[in-house]
Length: 427
Image (cartoon, rainbow, N blue to C red; front, top):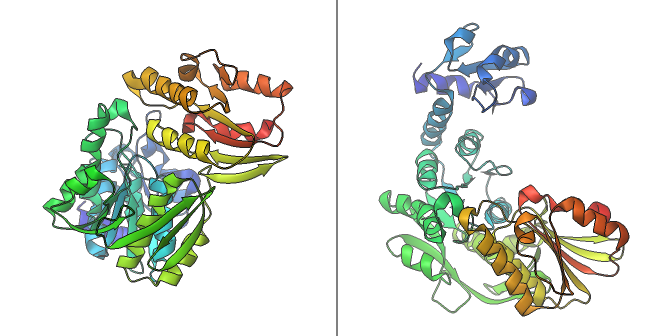
């Protein structure tokens, strides 16, 4: 079957699904093989649950004329998304980066939604499957699409750009994330910069934080819209930034008081402000959108539990985001502070050194009571009266069973796999 025919079938459907547990009526089911299952075997189930068409890549599971047989279902999903993107011709903003992608994406979405019909990546659907599904969620009614792109190795961002074909790009930062897959920090810069290379080759445009010297240098050959807090001439100059604990910025003659915690969120706000300004959203609407945005999913949330005030930032962690979160917390003007941090994953051979760096940083910068959870931090145990190390989360829970935190301001941060939001049950 050719892609034009598949697209015509897709247009007759109201949604796309790769999971029969979430099938909607009049949907297109695409059978994507997993590590432990063959989704072709679920095609009949999908039709029984209301799917109008199914795409399979094993003809043995052909059912009737509602079945579309292709050579590779995953490739068909990706090609369908590229074809649909060309069919719609709407402007697409792509964003990637080591830290802050999801928060920035959501801020851009709420800002642009003040003026346009905007659709964006849902959750963390930002890989070789999620990006195509995001594009297929766009319709003729969508005026601007926002596509988040994640990556943990070279050539991944390049591939996702070829699918999404963005008109605009934004990279939040280059940080020490997925060092194992990228091959070190320089590999991170190279991999994320594949977005810039795509935009250069296609003569598209970019949004840039001029205060990031690496990004400033890498985007000089692009048409760019910029922001700066360090007095570089920019499209949007940020006059002031404060965070105690919530971020407040002043720009374009307006004060914006967000519900985001930590100076590390300032550039996420600045990017949304700059993009909104470029697309002609009124400054009062930008202010309203940012001030009413409340993060969720364990990202920089302020929570009150019993007598404790908790900054829950357990959505994810890497050496870069951990460092800035700790720096911000140390500087926070709050009494009785306490730190709970968990292991950072996907660091490969750098794991010991990066966890050691965090321990040493805290040893040298603060006497705040600190709790380190996980085998990588445990391997860096040092004897200090204010430091406590636990090999497992269960070991930490045992400590909490006989030690209660009272009237504390607490930072909780760790990689997603640590699931440190569980700590709330025991505080």
